[in-house]
Length: 368
Image (cartoon, rainbow, N blue to C red; front, side, top):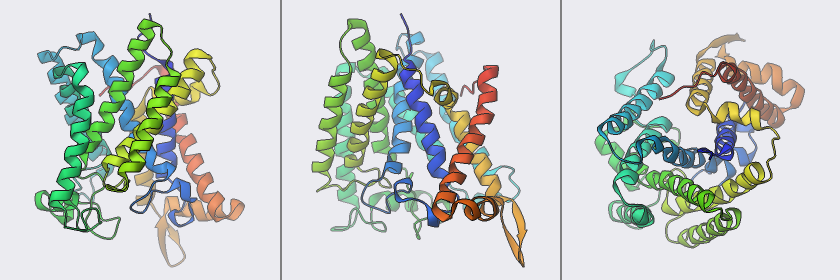
């Protein structure tokens, strides 16, 4: 009997490809709206990418723990803690390499990989220590607790605003403004410590889907309709909750968690049907290259993007980044502003894929 699902690696690969695509637009001012995050409340397809990746972390955990019979042995405990620390270290290596302009005073402590690390660590211990029948209750409790904390500690009447929410308040108290993201005009981290709590739920949803698929395969029961139905139900709940707790990716609101989980349920059901049941193989290898080496693919994409932004090229009386130079001199003149920006992003995905393909052919996989 197979122990892994090809469709899950394919889904992870699709998610990685989309993550690289939306993170490396040729020019942020000329990016098609669906490829940009919602400015605050609301939702775009791009907002689904990171939650889907975190969702797949939860999916993979089920397979990773199988060899330990899902028992929290000292060996497994140490492995979980080691992986958590390594993900933090990889994050700092990616974003501050080669450390020539590194400043501890302005170091951003939290980011994508730290959120993944904390979610992986927390959910690992939860699923290994809590009986399976209680996991849905744990998930509900996480989402309700986060909602309550946001209401209690955010400003009255403005608990979900950019400058007055509990996520920002806690990060400012613990880290100070110099260690937070400033891309929204003020010190506010979209991967804040408090908003990592509902990210645990996203990861747990992934684990529960993996558990569901595993049991259905053993019992020989149908998968697609139950997952699609559950996904549709979660989306309806998210839209209802949106009236009280707005769908917001940067706050990782509880309604946002339900919406993304619902969409991922449906997507994974359709991909499972296409790959496992219909046994279609279109573009499988392309996505497997990313899906089987996801941390490597993400690391390469971020490291390359950061270095291209740091590399300065003479332009007129000053300089411009290599990425900006390539956009204006290679892509924009041929394809125009918006299509040129998209073409740059697609080209960047392909460059990352070629690098990862070498690792794939050599069977070199980054195991953290």
